[in-house]
Image (cartoon, rainbow, N blue to C red; front, side):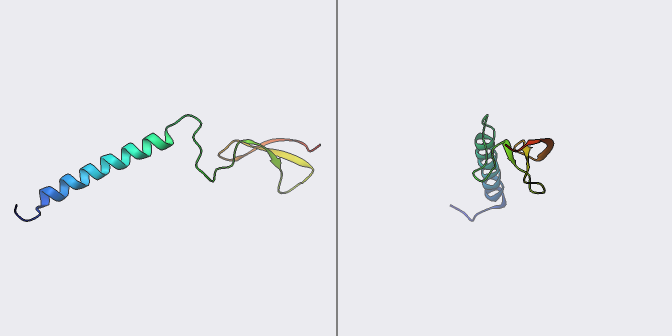
Length: 69
């Protein structure tokens, strides 16, 4: 058992990179997956006008609004 070579380090880095890719793709690739702090899509009170609701599409606030009842 000789010293830890550059090849050992390279192999270790490749294996770690593969593990990271697999873990990342399996957790975020599921249909319907949302990160734990994500806001669900839906109608929410508008921040600039509380008399209307604005649609949030899970990524951004849209231009779609409706009167608040």
